[in-house]
Length: 101
Image 1 (cartoon, rainbow, N blue to C red):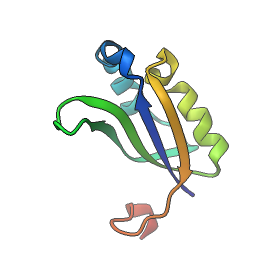
Image 2 (cartoon, one colour):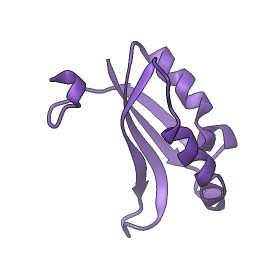
Image 3 (cartoon, rainbow, N blue to C red):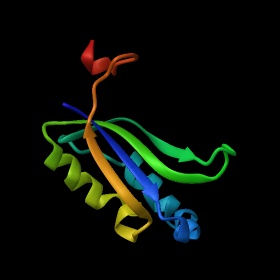
């Protein structure tokens, strides 16, 4: 099953994103978890296209509890950067991941 993770930064903690970014990127790149496949992940921005204000992930897992467990381990989340995190089932309509072919 596919899930979207929408994580919005706390505007009062902008400096934290830069401070934790290296650890966060290492975490994402080192994911070797057989329970969660990350199909896409990255920041989203203010309208200026430069200021990062959150993260969006598209993942595949057996159920939402497995995804919740992953979110708890995300360095940005653990550091308290995110003001709001939403996890929703996701349906691929266009550009499905290769595992769906």
